[in-house]
Length: 343
Image (cartoon, rainbow, N blue to C red; front, side, top):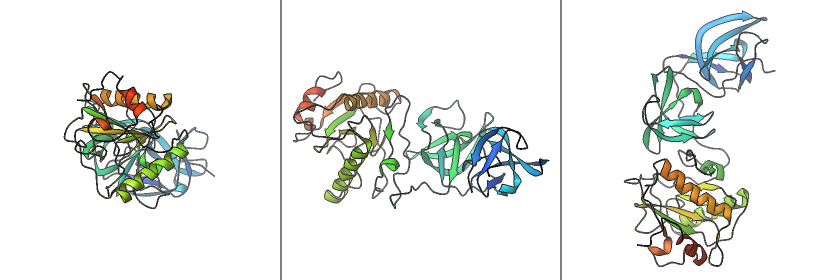
């Protein structure tokens, strides 16, 4: 029976050197000591929160005073173990949408936004600024800081179901972007080596098509993207799927290399731009409205979040290489877009 405060795998608001209260089984977190108080969450086995050092008796149980999601909470001690918060955790995962900043504190610039459930490598140290504890994370190979109240900590960033670790960050959901399906969600293979960062904010956006069958559901799009990745890695010997992002006619965007990283999408131009590929063959037709909307929204949100230059240039793959890509009809369409420039 769930009796105590939940700590959702969180070591929420914990600083190094503090004591932790860790759940030995599923238990409710409450806004006061005793079962008459409201439940504020549910803690699952092995999840931890900061222990404030005091306990009270209520209703025949001992209740531990903890910090949960930045607020005071109480958990029945019968379902807790107490230990130092050494935080051997290697992964920080968002319990809600939360900004990643360039420094500890809200005065620092926003590097991006972690969507609920997304994870980043935790670098092991924290800083308390403005009444909040800030966790030091690796954000696209750069230092980032996230308010710990909106994080849960895990021993590993690896995902289940694929048998291998996927991309290290999977935090591409920036404000204003279309829905981005992370590498973990679509089951990407691990890259053969870590991505290198682009030398500067890119100006060019290279448009591709997959020259494949189309998809209008996430299940089908996921299957095709896996085929793309296998072909790139096993057929070409590339370290990973080549594209920055892949767009489906289901209206979703699928994470490839992601923002700020060098892909293998456009020979001799991988370091000066991003590669967006729409799933399908657009020799004789254009992508559907859902895919076109997602491409345009992805570019727009990239500009607004500083991932693409405001004076960006759209090019078709064929503008820089002898290829039919992105298909004649799609190529005809992008030539009508305001930022298109073949030169």
